[in-house]
Image 1 (cartoon, rainbow, N blue to C red):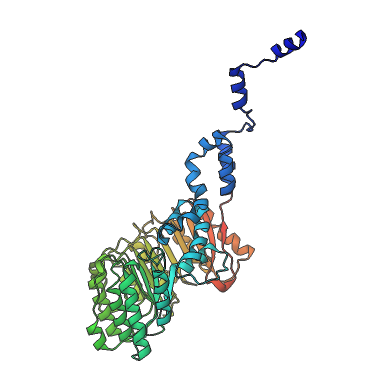
Image 2 (image 1 turned 90 degrees about the vertical axis):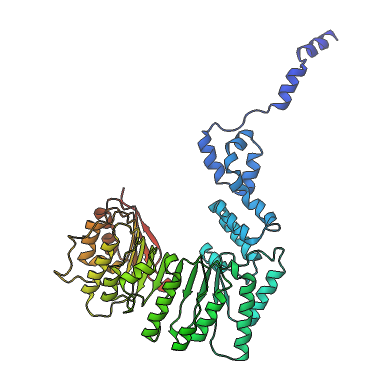
Length: 465
């Protein structure tokens, strides 16, 4: 008995010792640097990350600044029931890891979604909610009904603010009903629209008149895209009323008028109304019009920083070379039809020289721009000190002028994009890699297809070690 009491006395545990042994678990966390643990935890799924930070106070403290982004996918399904969809869309910006989760939920919920969407590419998924296309009265009324049945009917139904509409100038009962449906749509939700597209094969005066009337109910429009050729009688031009659009910044008109004189009148009226507020401008025939001089263009649209010129010719380039803009991005593309590509090259260099101090992004999507010996000189070219990216068709790398242009004027380039219709051979890849020798600041070369169905895969070439 005494021996037993002695044994108990030797094993006696005080309250203090018991408390410590009961609450203090052994440290089983491997001894790694906090930075290493952070990288490990960042690669966990949201569910695993949630479990991990709740098992170790050190991990919870270490990842405190990352919790919002990493746990967002777990909260998103709950938020959708309580927040408007355009607010959820903004939450995609929390982190790239959350983007796919947010997009998938939006594709299921927003009123413009038409299942099924089987695309794996996130870009295509976002594109499917970027543009709402309306071609019939029935489609418009179905859309309005879906929006009105949502928990937040007053919220923005156009998630990215983009809308495509199909109009027709012919007058019959069906067209009148569709026009009336469009008027109802714009009166209800026009203030949410920021980008509008009119993709007609042929735009007549009545169609353009109806289009401008609808825009009167879209005061927050930022860009207008007229994608079809215009065939209009003079009386319609005189009767057109341009609505007040104080937030309009971009005007894109990819085809001209059948009547050149009417086109000049329309362009001048458009620039008089909106020119001072425009920052982006794309009009094929703007520089071809005899009534729109470089001086007038500088006065009517002084704040343009992005300009696109298609189907170029020497005269248009020479006029652009005299416009007084602080241009940051310039896109020139299209096939030369004058039979003298040397004049195109000369005009291109004059244009680039005009904007040498401000250009950041330059795209020249023209093939086989040959140099006429003695016609083009690079000696008076100013360096493009701010130019970061340059896009050109790969075939131009076989021409001597491009290497002299890059070597003399583009020493600060960070990225070069090469457009091609076919996959590059090994010899062609070696030619592309020569750019790293000519451009000391170049970080990467990107091979891109000229068009999506060409079969060319996007490829990135990094400088040699």
